[in-house]
Every structure is written in structure tokens, then in C-alpha cells.
Image (cartoon, rainbow, N blue to C red):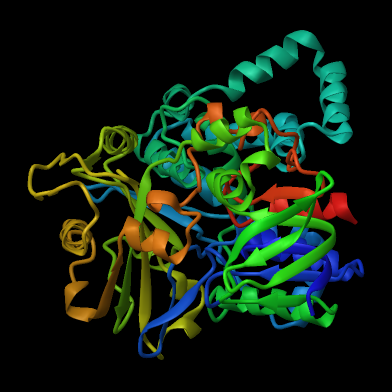
Length: 524
């Protein structure tokens, strides 16, 4: 079968959402993936016998809180999807052992924060209440909607009437505030600042970037109210559920099938050609979940796009690299603060200045001397991922250079700047040395350790260029109207019936599935 209504290239969360929604609306859908399995950045592997690791993404607050889940939840759960959550989603521990755990219970947070610095508990509650009462509707409307659409224009007009010009300008100014500025202005406790600051890394930003203050409120507010859900059994279970929803609605999924060209004619997309020479025709649309360089430099011919847009796509910038370390453990590790033992995700960091320093070192091409360590404990929420009594640590490092110019600590010979397995292992040793200061029994309970360098992350998913987990720098100049380009409108392209989705497009990275949802909504 080679004739479809809609063909979707790539199978990440945005593609899965788009395919499921369109298939449910009776469109004849084909989802074509070049890798040997569906999922994009959703991938579970049994790295060690009995241990099921999410080797890329793992946490689903954006999805559970978003419109795609609201629409597809019943179908997905009917096909076996199950989430697990916790009342203690995140925490922080500083080098000296000072720590703080965030609860989904506001009164608990108030008490803990007041104990750190009088007034900080009130300030935290006030900051979140003010955001959700005054700014959340506009913020989520801009983040989650097509910006050049009548619904967004209507939202802006409504907010302008309510806020008047002065209030609207005030909101715009506050939205540009850095996370550092907000944290230093609002809170006295360095531990509370350290709890919040690392979360902007998960938005592809640093604490000194414009707009990182607003994103810090968005993320910490979402985590404080909705927790950090994971998929029971491993994230591959959500891919399986999506695949079954698509198949149940007569959609088609293909793996190991690499699309090499988008076919065009009469000014519109007509289908695709795969590496093995097969042609698949699309009556209504082709949707590509790829980077701008892949779309305008490889899949489309030079005649299909304005030269200025092709050049613009070539100049699309990628952000810092990431790497991951996956531990299989005989049993859960012992934390000095027992509250951390039941916390889903912990940041080990020197604090606000430490996050800032590590980001700056990575931007300058250096291996950070003291990177922020993201310690995920998925088996706290879902013990089925490990043998009985065992545990998993999911370690992410988000402040790394794509090309290494040096080592800020002066310890690792970086050679020609490439991410070799030797450099990745040595850097992982540095991270482990810091972990054992807070988890003294860690090395005695390790069953296995797997390090994934930035180069290996890109090998798993070509959209992670240079190991950038967010498929493009997320600074303000490359977000909103400028993601992926100011020359395109929403998720359309110069080729009629060809749409562009994924982390390189608005609203950017994450497991929310927003761009797929927006395109599917437009095509139905």
C-alpha cells in the first residue's frame, strides 16, 4: 500500500500525537521512521539483565498537562498506558549536604522554605499564585498555540484590553527577566534558589538568559502542581500504546525506512521517496519531524524553497550538548537526607552561581569542572523497571560543549575536541566521584554503568545534532516567532501541504506533543 492521505516522517512524540489524532479522524495515515523502532527520543533498553532504562527522555509532566493527552488519554490507557507519579517530584542537594525537597503539597513547601529563610515560603507561594492567577493563561497560550493564528491574536487582544497598554508592557518586560534576577530578587535562601535554577536547563536555557525567569516559573509551577509522572514499565510503553491507537484506526507505521526526499509538484507536497527507492503518495499532506537543515537541505530540492529560507535554515543554531549515565543498582542508594530517597529527580549542584558557571564553561567549549548533575530515580515511582529490590539511576548532564576546546578542571586531555568514548568515560568518572560524596554506598551496589556521549545520542536520533537534546538553541532569538524561522508561518512551509513539526519548531522541545497536536488540529 503506497497511497495515503497524510504521511508523517519521523516518529517522536509530536509525530505520534499527530498520527493518532489524524487516524482517529478517519485520515489514512502513514508514519515512517528511519530507525529500527518508533519513538524518536522515547526509547527503553534493557541495558543490563532485568533493568529497563529510558536511555533518552523519561519524564511526562508536559504531556500529562497538555491538550494532546486530554484528547487521547482514553485511547492510550485503553491500549495499556499507565503513569506513575509521586508527591515528592524534585529536590536539590548542595556540595555541603544542604538539601531541599519540593512537595506537591503547598503547605509542606511553605514550612520547609520558611525553615531555610523566613519569608521564603510566603514568597514562593506568592510567586506561583501570581503566575497562575495573572500570567499563566497568556503564557501557555503563547507557548502552546500557533502564534500567527486568529485564536492567538484574539488572546492577545483580550489580554491587552484587560491589562491595558501599561500592564501589557509590564508583562512583556517581566517575561524577559532572567532566572537569576528573579531568584535573587524573590528569595533569600541559596538552597531554594538552587532548587529552582537547574530547572531552566530542562528548557534549554541558562539562568542568565533572557526569558529564563518566566520559564523557571512555568516549570517549577508545573512540577509543584503536577509532579513528575513516568510511564509504568518504561517509556516504550507509551510508544506501544500510540502505535496500537494508530493501527486500531487503520493507520500504518513503518520502521527501518528512511525518507530521503519529499516529492513536490504543482506547488504542493505529493509524497515521499525512501532510501530503498519506494514511493509513497500523500493526497492531503506530508508532515516532517526533522531539523531545518534536514528539511530544506536534504528532503526538499533547491527549487522548492526561497534561497533566503534555505540559507536561514543552514544558520539554525544548536545548543549545548548533553550526555547520560545509566546505573543499574542492586538496591536503592542511601542518601544522607532520607527525603531524597523518595524523590523522583534530584539536582546535585553548587547552586545558582554553579549552574551559571557550568553553562558558561560549556558555551566556551570547556568540559565544566562542576556540572549540574540531574539524578533521576525512576524506580522510586516504578519499581517494575528493575529486578525485585533493585534500582535505576538516570543521570543527565546538560552543560557540555558539542566540540571540546578544553577542560575547565585541567584534568582531561581533550585531543582534537571530538567526543571519544574515552573522554566520555573519564568525564563520567568525574561525575561519579561527586555522586559518591552524597551516595557513599553507590560503588558497592553497581550492577552496571552505561555512558552515552553526545555523539552516541546523535547516533540514536539524528535530530540531536552534536548531542543537543533540544534540537536547536532555545534562547529567545530562536524561540516563538523565530523557531525555526521568522520566514515561515506557524508550522507551514513554502510548499503547500508540507508541514514542519518537532523540537526544532515552535513551541520547542519536550514531551508535550504540542507541534504535532497543532498540525493535526489544523488538518482535521
